[in-house]
Image 1 (cartoon, rainbow, N blue to C red):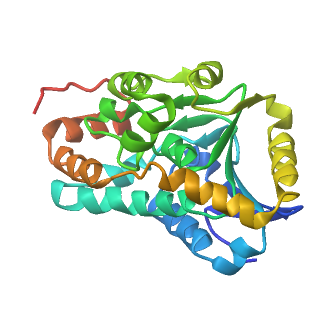
Image 2 (image 1 turned 60 degrees about the horizontal axis):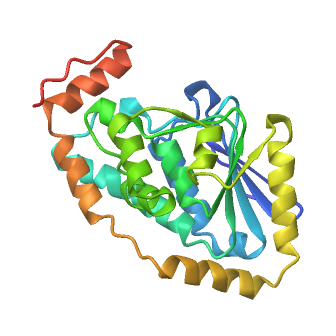
Length: 256
C-alpha cells in the first residue's frame, strides 16, 4: 500500500482506515493532505479491494480546519482555485461507490467539518466538537458546507452554525442530524469498523446503487460558493481575520 506524508493507511477486515496524521497541527488540511486524499479516492484498484472506508484523525482532533497559514495567502485572484481544490477532493469522497464513514474523534472545524460532511455517514466521539467558524475570518466555508450542511441539517440549523461560527457539542450535533451516532471515545474506531464490517456482508452492487441513487436525487452546486469565497479573499476583513488568528488576538473587523 502506498505511503503518504500526511495520512496513515491500514486495512482492518475489509475496511480501509485513513488517519489524518498532522497531530501537531490538529490535522489541519493543507495542500499536501488534499493531494494525498485525492490520490486515494482516484485509485480505483484500492477502492475496489475494500468494502468501506473510515476516515479519522490522529491525536485530539479529527481536523481543525484548513491550514490558516496557507489560507492567509489567498487573494481574490487565487481564492477560487483554493476553494475548488477542496471542493474537488470532497466531491470525490462523496462520489465514492463504497461507504465512507467519518469517525470524528475530536475537533471537526471549518474544512474538517466539511470533510466529515462529504463522508456518507458520521460517527462521533462524545468528546467531538463541530463548527463552521469561517465567518470569524471574514470568509465563508469554501469546501462545500454551504451546500452539504443545508441538505443535512436544514437551512435554519445550517445558517445558525455558519452565521455565528460557534462550536457545538457532539450531543448537539446528534440532535440536529449532523451525526448519525455518538460513541464512547475509547470505542469509537472499533464501533465504526464493526458497523462497516456489518455492511460488508451485504451485496456490494446493491450498496453501490443505494449510494449512487441517494446522491443523484439531490445534486449540489458549488459554483456560487467558490466565487463568493474568492471575492471575500480580496477583502480587508479577510486579511484582518487571518492575521488576528495567526497572531492569536481578537480581530477588528471594519466591514471592508
